[in-house]
Image (cartoon, rainbow, N blue to C red):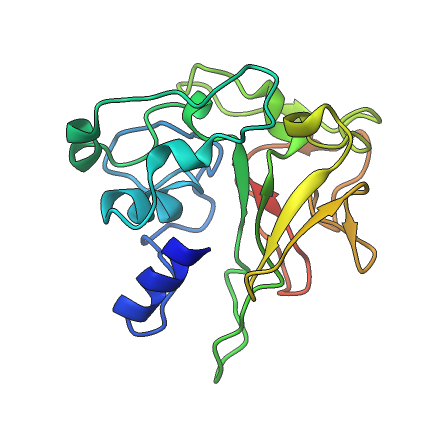
Length: 199
């Protein structure tokens, strides 16, 4: 959050953002093409600008062990995190039609890895087809052995929640999602109150 605050201060109170096309596949973490697909590209700006160390994006509570390291000289040449394994958090996808006239501080900025995206395919050439089943719609993040997840709010506060809900809203799904629905990786909140953290 300190790195994010410093970025916002340097960029006239603007959150890090890259231009995206509505319907772009936000699940393609690690894609290095020119198209701004991945939802992590916004956050990668903090790494490129040296506001945050890339190792800070791997949760120390992951069962896989310590953060992966990569050559800092390669950071400037990357358009996104090098691969999914280098980032174990999920970030809020903003509503494409924000309320006009004021800058809103998001309720949630990021959280431990969304359980939906533990099953992401490695091959980006095919479209994502992920079925939301009972397990995926109830599990806590894998980052802390399924005990719960840390959530970073827009005011800098961090809470460890044993449930996936904030004010009755499941942060890991959109309100329109239901068991049995297919997630294609292009969805976005239809209203600002619907929190959805994704890759």
